[in-house]
Image 1 (cartoon, rainbow, N blue to C red):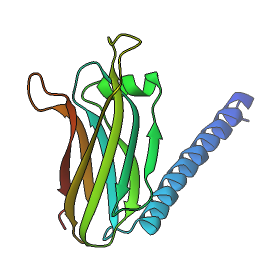
Image 2: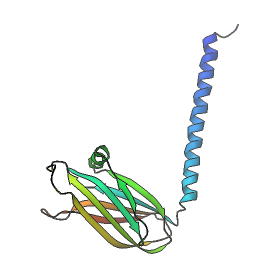
Image 3: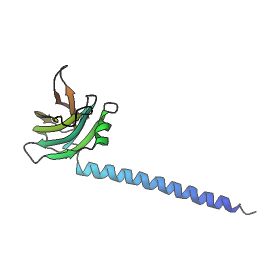
Image 4: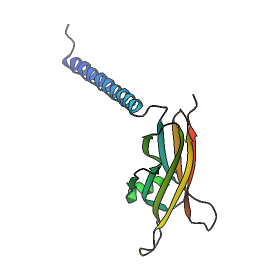
Length: 163
């Protein structure tokens, strides 16, 4: 007795789905391998940006390491609002830095969502020295307010992977 024609089509569909899953897994593994090759753990440094002020919309942001050329980022309104969701944190860049002491400079331009159209934007910057060891290093640049009436400012939080 021959199986119904639908079962052959079902088996083909399952085989195609299995192949799709294998391709997705292969792509994921290849991407991870590429990232590990481009950014080895001893030099990998990731920079994250977070906004910890309700209603503050980040417009522009730039980061410079050791006096080099700045990496500039511009955010539209939707991207700015995403930072406000659940204390959003976003990786804005990944760079290779040799182990040792480094200088970071970051600048921002922002505006409160309820600001009048003719209000001047809020600007600020941060300069700091940090030590990069031989493990992955994550730098969190957080837009915060240090006091009740203080202007928004950047703070630096550093975490390193333990081996």
